[in-house]
Amino acid sequence: MGRKVKNLKLMMKNIAEDIKTVLEFYQAMGIERIPLNTIQDTGYKTQDKKSHASCILHHASALNSQQKRDALQALRDEIGDCQRCKLSKGRKNIVFGEGSVDAEIMFIGEGPGEDEDLQGRPFVGKAGQLLTKLIEKMGFKREDVYIGNIVKCRPPGNRDPEEDEISACSPFIKKQADIISPKVVVSLGRVSTQTLIGVKIPIGKLRGKFYQFENIPLMPTFHPSYLLRNPKDKWLVWEDAQKVLEKIKE
Ligand code: URA
Image (cartoon, rainbow, N blue to C red):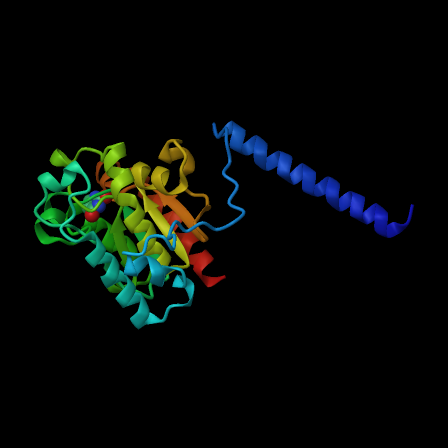
C-alpha cells in the first residue's frame, strides 16, 4: 500500500475517532439529537413580502453601519405596538435593545425587569449595573457592545418567560443578531442560552464552552441576577469573559 493511501486511512481513522469523542460528549451532556445545519436557513423567506427588515437581512453580513441602523429601524417598525403575546398586556415599554450596530460582542438576556420596563432600555437595574461592570472590566464601554433580550416585554412579577412568549418574540432578537453580526454572542442565563442553542441542559453545564448560533460563536454564562445572589461564582463569569476576549482577537 502506498504511503499516500496509508496517510489517508490514518486521517480518516483520526476523524472518525474525533467524531466519536464529540458524539460521546454530547451524549454525556444529555443531547440526543443534533440539528444538521447544512444550509444556513436564516428564516427570512422571500414570501415574507411585508417585511422590509427581512429583505435587508438576506445580506446582513455585508451591511455597512448605516444599512445596519436602517435594518434595525425597519425591524423595530415591524414589531410596532406588538400584541403578539400576552406579555403585551402588562408592559409599559417594549425594550427593543441598544448599543453599537458594529458591536463585536452582543449580550442577550432573558427579558426586561421592572426598571427596564419603565425606561424602555435593557439591563438598567441592579443586574444591569453588574453587567455594565463586566463589560467595562472586559475593556469596553457599554455603548461599544449591543445588549438585548429574548423577550422584549416584562414578564409579570419577573417570572421566566413562557414557551409561547419566547416563540413569539425570539425571532426578533435572532434577526437583531443577524443584522449586527457580532464576533461573539454572550447568552446570559438559562432561558437565553437554551433558546439560542436549542437544548434543554442546565446553564451550569453549558457555560464556559462555545456553541454555534446561526453562524456566530456563542458563549453561555451565568445571568447577572444569579451573580447578585451567588457572588462567589463571579470568577466563573470572568473566566467565560476571557474566552470571549480571546475569540474576538482571532
Ligand atoms: N434581566 C434580563 O434578563 N434582562 C434585562 O434587560 C434586565 C434584567
